[in-house]
Amino acid sequence: MKRIIQLALLLGALLSAATCALGATHPGVVKLDNGALAMFTSQEGTMIPYVDKSSEPVIYGNLASKYPKGLYWCCVGFSLSGPLAGEIWDAAAFTSTANATVTKVTVAVGYMFSTTTFDVLLSVNADNKGVPGKALKTWKIKFPNGQPIFGSCCVVKSGTGSVPVSANTQYWVVLSTESNSDIVAAWNLGDYDEIDTIPTAQYVNGVWNVYSNPAPAFAVYGH
Image (cartoon, rainbow, N blue to C red):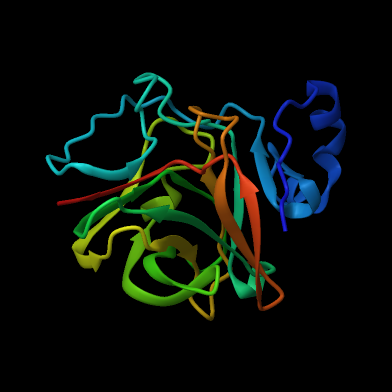
């Protein structure tokens, strides 16, 4: 299945959509494309310069690769939420050109709201017939005091470890939640190479659905 998410949206249409369920719960957040996308329209976010401190080579990445001051789209991203908030998980595929060891994964993900949960799960997963399979390594990504807020720029979250990957084999970077989570967050879209697409997936109603979309903002480092 292929779907290109349309990102050229009229401001008036976005504002008129602000009464949808997500926007009504959290002022300034608009839910788009049947909930697959979230868009931030208020000025809560703060602008923070991004500095890439990783010394490892990039296996795959689109963080500030072309526009250092435009690390990612601040205010548009894939919806992410726990089971208690209408479960939606996100994934993006990557392929290494050589046998390598992933040592760090960085994603642009922002917090929107929750009552009890202030973390999401980041993982590198094997491929299972074209959809995310078994998690090879999982990290808990925390949002202390509900920060960074989705709509901020430019803050990222990372996990470090050691994950062997094989050449010319597809893997997935996955953002998911814990079983008792009520968090609502979003994975920012990349702002570079918005024409070429990569395999992406969303987990909704217990099923992974695969699409061809512009890449969300992330980087996979290793050697």
